[in-house]
Length: 251
Image (cartoon, rainbow, N blue to C red; front, side, top):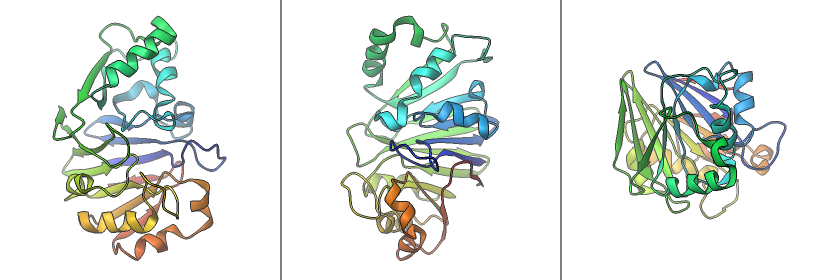
């Protein structure tokens, strides 16, 4: 299993950090976690082909996490660029169909992939569901951010990775992450913003989950002005990795 950080930033434009997007290669599949603005183009820098996305899992519907969904769906209609013929799976919390319906009203057929190409899974926002695709198992749990926000756990090859999406401290996320090999947590600011984690809180959550390795990501600019690893290390004593765009982590 391998994680590629395509975007370690937020919705704030930054030359250093793109908006959220994380590619996970596992069980012979490419699972993509969130698809923020600019992620599709950034994938090209890191040898990731959008035609290879088997699973697109969206944590929530804020623009910095889903803005490239429209160009992605648009691009699936053109075989000159999109070469996939097997269905891809889109995972999101219940309510996504209504959201997608609004996109269809706005853009019409241009956001409708060829018939049968997209398999939509609306997940219970309370969590507890599993999606099994060959060797890959994807589990979800609610997070403390907005209604319907989900974290995802990807299991394959005897390994497990958990990605929080946006969250505040969350007992359900701790439970989802227990036994995982790598935990990717948002760490938005060094000061408290409700609905998000500080470095200290991210470290505490990782310690509660008992994971051996922690990736901190989803940084607003103030995070680049402080040693967020040292702040998280006050609560978590495992390995801490500060995410950067293009970083690859073998799980």
